[in-house]
Structures are given as C-alpha cells and as structure tokens.
Length: 482
Image (cartoon, rainbow, N blue to C red; front, side, top):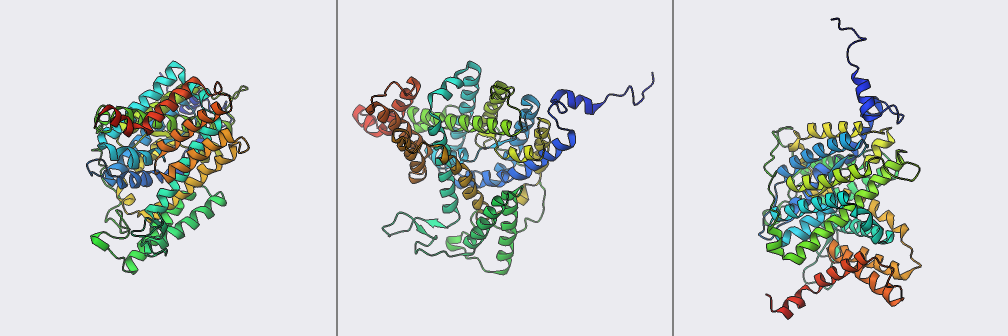
C-alpha cells in the first residue's frame, strides 16, 4: 500500500465537513482569529468571577479561595465552550455569567452554605435542560413581556455597576451619617486612597477603549490598571487599616512565579438539598426561579444576537440547532454548579469573534483550548486588585443598561413594572426583589386596567409565588412557624 498526498486523510476537509466552514463562508484561519478575539475579550472573567465570589460570605462566614475559583472558572469555561463548539456548531463561548455570580455571592450564599448555593445552581441548570426538552421554554418566552425581560437585564446591569462602585471604595455606606451612601470609603464625601485612583483611571480607560470599539477593551484596562497598581504599591505607602491592605484581598505584587499546578479542589463541592434546609423551601424555590429566569433569557438573547450578527438565522429568524444549543447552555449551568463557580452561560463577548470572521463552532473550540492554557497561569490572576477589576463591572453595567431603550415608556402599565424591576435590584441589593416587584405590579396594573386576561396564567402563578416570598415573615407568624 502506498501513502501519498492523494491517499492521506485531509484533516482540513474533515473540519470543513463537520463544522460546515466553507458553507458558511469562513476558513480555519478566520475561525482561529475569531477564537482568539473572543478569548481576549472575555478573559477578564478568570479574574472577575473569583473576585466577586470570593468577596461573598456564606451563612457560616466562609469565603471561597480566589486561586481555586480562578482555576475552576477557567476549567469549566474551557470544557463547556468546547462542548458548545462541537455540539452546537456556533461561535459561542461559555463562562461564568456576570450578574448570576453576584446573585450567588451577595444574595443566595448568605442564607446557606457555599455547597448549598452551588447545589441550587446545579438544580437551575437541570431545570433549564428540562424546559428545553419538554418545549416549555417557548411557553415561558411567550408568558413574559419583552419589556420586562429587557428590564431584568437593565436592573442586573445597575446592580453590577453598584457592586463595582462599592467594592472600589468609590461609594460607601457612612457610619453615623443620615445619607445611606456617600462618595468615598471614609464617609466624608471625599475620594481617598490609592486604590480609588487606580479605579478612576481604570474606569476612564475602559470607557475610552469601549467607545473606540477597541477589541479586548475590558481585558486591556484590567492589565493596564494592574500594572499601575503595582507601580503605586512599590513606590508609595498603601495603608493597611485593621491589618488589611486598602487593596483588598488581592495585593498587586509579583507572585514570584507565573505558573502553577491548578488547584481544582472546588470541583464537586455542591449539595442539592442543603439550600432547602437552611434557607427554607419557598426561598430556595424563588432563588432557583430567579437563576433560571436570568440565565435562560440572557442566554436566549445572546444566542439570537450572535447568530444574527454572524448571518446564521434562517428565513424565519430561527437559530440553527437552537434546541441543542439551549440544552448545552443548560448543561453549562450544571457544570458551573459542579465546579463551584456559579452558573455558566453564553457570553455576548462572542461577538468579538464574529467580528473577526468566525462563523462556526470551530472558533469556540479554539477559545476553549486557550482557556485550558490559561488554567496554568493562576498566580498571575491573584495579583489583580479589586480596584483594577471593578471598572469592568461598571462597564458591563453600562452595556446591559443599553437595553432600556426597548421599554415602552408611554405605556405606564408596563413601564412602571419595568422601572420597579430596574431600580429595586440595586436599591435593595437583590435581583430577586426587582423581578418579583416587576411581575407583581404588572399583573396588578393590567387587572386595574380591566385587562387581567392579558398576563399569561404562568405569569399570574409566578406573581403569586413572589407575593408569598415577600410576605414570608408575616405568613410564618400567622402559621406560628419560627
């Protein structure tokens, strides 16, 4: 037998046939560039997700390790992005969802243990998979008015931005002052400290790069701000009141080595039933519903938006393999819970890869492989201070805020619920409260208008569930339950 160029397998053609590269007007080079562009625009999640989650405390005062979170974040993103590329054949990258990790760290975890909270994320992912398999996703999509879906994204954006401002020390709750919040960490209405300087410079750099449509704007800002923080830390004296540096958990000093063996001890640290015990059945169910609602609709909008930008929608505006893609997104949520890194979902930053010419899942495979490489550089991420990463939270808040233009402000019966949804998330430090207030006020106002049949029966059921959630304390008192 002879082995010639004519008889040897053509790996390029194999890739082309499987991913339909040529059919979609792309090539392997474009897919590689697209995969790189997507990674560099979303690599900040390896830093930002650990910062958010490690900032939270569970009911028992425990915190998660930044290094372990960073390694697990990269690993789960790598696995699920590759699965999305191979199984969904769309240029969609997956990683821990911003907003969802905020819900987990600052709302869910304080009512239970971290494994319990991650168990709710696993249940959420299984719930999304169930909705996709049974076809209920379409019923849910039809039940919730589009403006309310957009308001949820806007509210999450405001909530994330507020968290960023607080964590940076730009906004603070002053002691012994009548105002609930004030400028600066000292409660004096003044900005003080070197970390705030880094934050302000980083924020201005981030918005400048974003406005110039520079690829990788958020990542560039994080890196530049970290370098600035390292210079300041080396040249100036940064106070450490009460034994803790003003920089926070992450000190901007060189770790001594750039690579290390990934610490993956967080994998498998979840409990499926503990959340119902510690937080209560109703509260746990509402938490799960909140995660499903935020994750499901955010993913749906991202998937449709990226597919549209890539020119992959059919004549009816449908996404190719949408059932499979949404199922994989549900599995990503499960994977995020199993990995203790919060629910994973499709990233809108995938648009950067599409802008570079990516049209198939091969780009996602490349992005996932780069995440694998990043897995071994955890020490570099541990030197990024909160002041260098929090400008990204404010920037992401702005990006989510842009959806406010979709709200019909002249129809008060829907505009008021949207308004309550948006403002109550940051003002009560709770995404659940915002969603609940929006749903309840919507069905009430439509009923007052004599249009009570307009809200879907499912929306009525959800509103009743939220009403029970808000009235949980008096209900317990009435029933004599402690």
